[in-house]
Image (tube, rainbow, N blue to C red; front, side, top):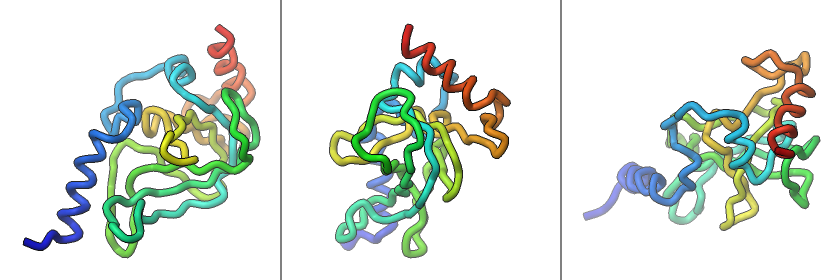
Length: 165
């Protein structure tokens, strides 16, 4: 019996639950504090999104779609990266008219400034966002954090306080 692309993609999406780090939560969000995200993250940075591109994880097998976001790092708050541009991999996206939709994960837009809490992918040089959508904070034009209204400097100071404790 021949497998269709959609059945292969469905199996890949289901298997994602078992191979992705548990901290991604895959849409099952619980209340998590800023302190918990800070402790969990390998890297916390302020940066600007320079590119967003969805593509197959393997161009030959076409088993899973990821959206790869290139982030130009402006400031490292926790951890360090040898590169000033990092890649964040988020499961899902649209390639060749095929959509892989994963709810509860972060979405990025070119030109957007963000603070992100990241986990290293030990199988590549990419990063994953801690706790899905709640590990990404958009910086508004007035240098205030979306939703909280805190200034960027206040937000960073709070994170640094958790790192030093």
